[in-house]
Length: 522
Image (cartoon, rainbow, N blue to C red; front, side, top):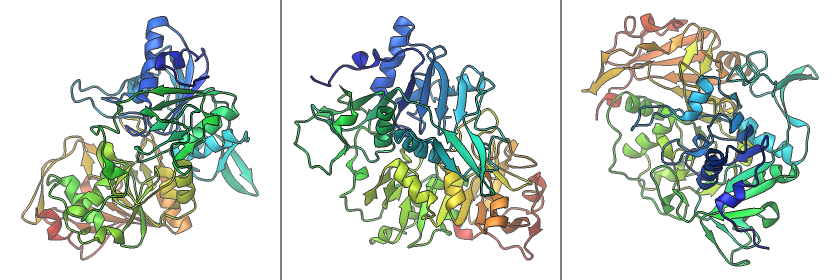
C-alpha cells in the first residue's frame, strides 16, 4: 500500500488533544506544507482543537516560510514547548510573529527549553526512558526555582523538576508521548526511506521520528521528490522507511529564507576564501572585527545566533580565509555543520562550504562533551550579579536556543553586542567612533529580565574565561566582576561608558588601552 498522500489527507489523521512535533531550524528543513495544511484544516472545520506542539528549534521565519506561525492559532494550539521562538519584525506590516502575540497576551500555555534539552529529551522519549537529566541550566531561567521555562501565566504544569543525586543538583525533564511527527527530507521511495541530499542540515529528523514511533504515533514526511526503491546508496538514507507512515510531496520548497537552492551549503565546493561583498560600516561591524581578534586557528570555535555570527563574515572580508586560510579554522554551530563559513541572519545554522555534518542530538553531545573550546555568543543584558540574558527582554521572548549548553561547556567565551540599544546611532571612520544618538535602553543593568546564563558564578567556580565586546568598550569578566580593559578611540570612558552602566565595572585598567584604530576604518 502506498505511503504517498496529499498534505490534506495526512493532517486529517490528527485528532483533538494530540501532541504534534515538528522538525525545522528557522527556514531550514521546515515542513511548511504540512504545518500550513494543518492550519487550513482548522480554519475550515474548527478541528482539531487543543493541540500541544513540540518544536525542538523554532520552525520557519514567520515571513515567507511561516513554519510555527501557521499553527499559532488560539483554539488549535493549547500548549507549545519550543527551544526558541521567532522574534522578527515583518518588514511589510511592522508586526511581530503571531506566535509572539499569543505568548505576550497569555493566549497559550508556552514553555521554552534550551535546545540541548529538546534534542536530548527526544532520545529519552525514543527509548521510553524516564526523562532527560542534566546539570546544564542550574541557576538559569529553566531552573524551577526561577521559572522552570514557563513563558506564560497559563503554563502552570512543572515540565522541569529539580533533583539531587549524590549531593549534586540536576534538572529533570520527564518524558511524555508524541502522537504525530512532521519531518522534512529531500527524497523518499515507495517504502518511505528518506534521504537529505539537498538539505545542509538534518537537525532532529531521525530522533523525532524515533520518539514518535516509540510513542505509538504517526510520522509524516514532506519531501521534494520520489525516487525508485534501492536507487540510492545506503549511506544516503538517514531515516528508514520503517519509521515513516506517510509521505507528502511538495516539489518546490525553499531551501531556507531567501534561497531556493544553493549547493554551496552542501559541500564538495572549492572556495578561494575571497569575497567582494562588504558588511556596512557601523557598530555591528566594529564589534565583529574586535571579536574576530579572539578567534584562533586550530581551535574548535562555535558561533551562536545574532551579532556573534557576523564574526566569520568580517574575517572573510579582511582576508583571513584567502589562499586556503579557511582550512586553518575549525568553525561550527549548534546545528551540526563543521568547517566552512558560519552564516549570519536568516542563513544562520548551516555553513557555506562545509566539510562534515552530524545531526542535532549528536551535535549537542559534541557541545556538552566540552569539545568546543571557544564560543562567540550574543548578549542582550548583563547585570550586577554577573548574569547574562539573551532569552527574554522587553516585549521580546526569543528564548535561549543553544546558548545555555554552549556557554556552560566552552572554556573561553566572547559575548558580543552593542553597548546600548533601541535607537543607537554611531559614526565610524578615520580610526574613531562617534556616538550620534545614544540608545534608549541600557544593556548593563542592575538586574536582568531573565537569567539565561549565570556567567560570573561559572567564571568564579569553574574557571571559565569570558570577555564582553561592544562597539565602544571591551570588558573582561573576572571572579570579582567586570574589568574595563579597552575603550574605543573618540569615546570618553567615564561619560560614555561607566556613567551609562547600572552595574559599573569593578575595576578599570590604568592606563586604559584603546581599541585598535583599524577597527574603525573601512
